[in-house]
Length: 218
Image (cartoon, rainbow, N blue to C red):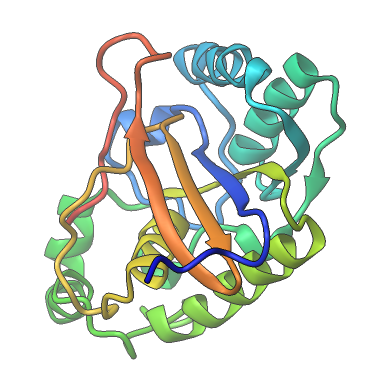
């Protein structure tokens, strides 16, 4: 028997912010407020042009500069004013913030091993665990979906946030090694019908110049 959905899907296009100089240098940004570089601004504008025909009803964005500038560029293209959602900020990486991945590994070998091993309770000293981040991100995601039944919306966020949402939608544990890409300004479509989530497409980059970075460790 074919199950017929009782409601129209709510579709959310998750957009990672455009490139920053720290992305290019493989430097850990966390909640340090780094802006887009020139490539990142072009990527944000390209994402906006690509989404013009997608029937977008609302645009949301993390309030950190790199995501907010990306959300503003998309909003301009769509004629929509973005709404800030601080809950979609990047993970707080504590003592790792400002370091490259290599520097973090050399300076904090035990902590880096916990981070690389995806220890869900590890919080970097003055940072945030995966478990805490999961609660804030998925709570806001479900709140946004509930506000837009049957509509298409855009949410601009960060690589670490996308990592959490992919696992949430697929029902995978936080400790599972990453098996998906998270390119700068990539488009990731997820949908919810009657409280059930699924991925439609992930890491779309057809709208971008070649070379969108996925600098996150797996």
